[in-house]
Length: 288
Image 1 (tube, rainbow, N blue to C red):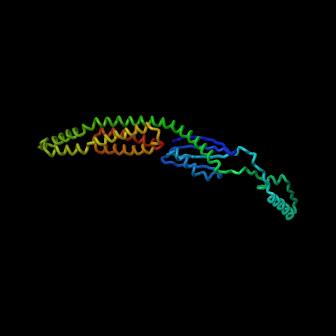
Image 2: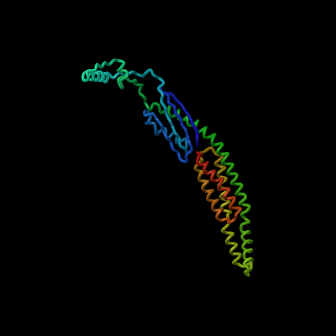
Image 3: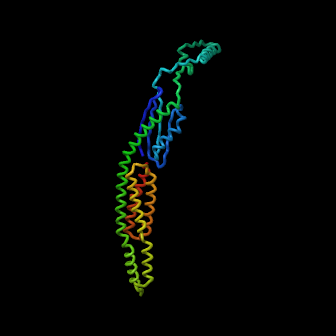
C-alpha cells in the first residue's frame, strides 16, 4: 500500500534523518539508500523495516548531517603543495614562459587543503538510526491504515454483492433438477416414442442429472469463505496473503458451480460474482 513517513534523531553531534515511501507490490521489496559510513548497519535496518511492513515496495533513504562543527579541522598537505610549486617551476624552465604560483593558487589546487570532519562511529549511531526509522515507520503505517479503511469499505461492498448473488443461486438451485425433468419429458413426448414416464431408465437419467448438478457443498463452502472474509476485515493484523488465498478458493467454488449447475439463471449470477471477485483480487494485492 502507498504511504510516506519521515523520522529524525540526533546523537554524538550527528543528525540522522530517514524517509520511507511505500508503493503497491504483491511481495515485500526493500530498497535502501545509505551513506557509505553506515553500510554496516544495512542488515539491521532491513530487518527493522521488514518486521513492520509485510508487502509492497519500500524505498528507504538515510541522510546524515554533522550538526556540531567544532571538531572539524582544516588540513594542509605540505608535500602536495610543494609538488605544485615544483611543477610550476619546471613548466617555466622548459617553456621559457614565466609561471608564478601564489598561495591563492594553492587554495584552488585539488587536494592541498581539505576539511576533515570528526570521526564517525557507525555503531554509536545504531540507536538513533533505529529511533528515526521507527518514527518513519509509524507515519508510513498511519498513512497506509487510512488508505486501508477506504479499501476495506470497498472490498466489503463488493463482498455484499457476491453474497446477494449467491443467495439468488440458492433459490434457483432446487429448481434445476425439476426443470430438467420437465424438459426431458417434453422432448420424449415430442419425439413420439412410446416411453412410460415412470420407466426406470427415465428416472435413473433424472437422478444422475440431479446428482451431477447438486451444488449444495459448493454453496456451503462459499458461505464459509465469505464469513472468513468478514473475520479478516475485522482484524488489524496483516491479512493480505490470507485474503489472496480466500479469493483463489472462492473462485474455485464459483467455477465448479458454473460448470455443474447447467442453468442460465445460475450461470449469469456466477458471472456477476466472478466479476466482483476479480475486482477484489486486484485490490487484495495491495493489502498488508
